[in-house]
Amino acid sequence: MVNIETELLQPIELGHNPSRKRAEVWIDFDGPVGIVRKRVARVRWNPKNQWNTVDPVYGCVGALTNMDEETGEFYGCPWGCYALFSFKKLKADFSTPVPQIINETVLKDDFRRARKRTRRNWVRNGVIGDPSLSWEATLDLCDIEHRMDLTPVVFTRQWLDPSRSQVKEMVDYDVLLHLSICAMDSDEFLAPREEMVRSFLRHGGRVVLRNVTFHFDDTTDESVGLWEKQDKLMRGEFGMFGDLRPEVLENPARLIRGKKQRNPTWKVLGDWAYFKAPTTKDHKFSRHNHNWTAGVLYDQPACWVGCRQCPVQCLTRDRQMTLVEF
Ligand code: SF4
Image (tube, rainbow, N blue to C red):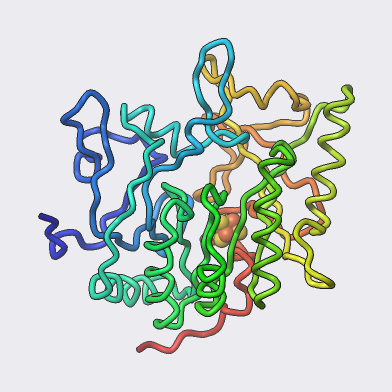
């Protein structure tokens, strides 16, 4: 039985020395591999984000993609999934999605506190899992956020397609949908996502293509093709409906590189263009950081500095108004 009284806004510092002891609260380690517990969804933070994150689902089926053929190890999405990396360290299963319990009373209290703390009018839905793996839980959450005059921002790779009525519902809740895609995604992968973007626009919704960008190797035909595809995605022509086109946000990839880290994506990148990424928490350069990036490559809004100091705020600019307490 979950004691929601004692679970007040406990942070999950997933990317920061995940300790198994601390993780026991939300991962059941009784079996051979840790399994995420089904608990009441709470508003949280992590070292990159502000106190405005909530996960309707923990875990992601993308954990079973992007395999290194030599070792058989999976790296998740082409840029390498940081949550998957943390789960591996914890010896826990990330590939099984576990929808969380949406409790309106608890969440309303959390949102009130989070709003006071962050003075932000938007909520990030999806950090340690993909909301598309339970559109039902995600929509319940967005409904609450919308009624509290918060903009629900949903981060997804869209592993499951929403139905037409679910798209309409999201538009009614003023959801700002952030679809993470990149030039390394196959045409088969992109096709249903393009259809969903179109459907969102057709119903009057707002979509942001969160294009994860790479500096490809310039010396092969394959890489030249990838550059072209990336440029096209950055132009926002993907999923156009008439004159309507999605907004575009560049998300420069931050890839882990280490002796045991062989994300296959490195094979098509121009190594020389990469440098140690600044920290996501405070945008400081540290030689201890194991993330590498080529930085911002396009002259467009980018997800680059840490969330607390970010001027972009996930393109929720129209919601950055002075807050009235309620
Ligand atoms: S756009 Fe800004 S607020 Fe949004 S995730 Fe990126 S750094 Fe954080």
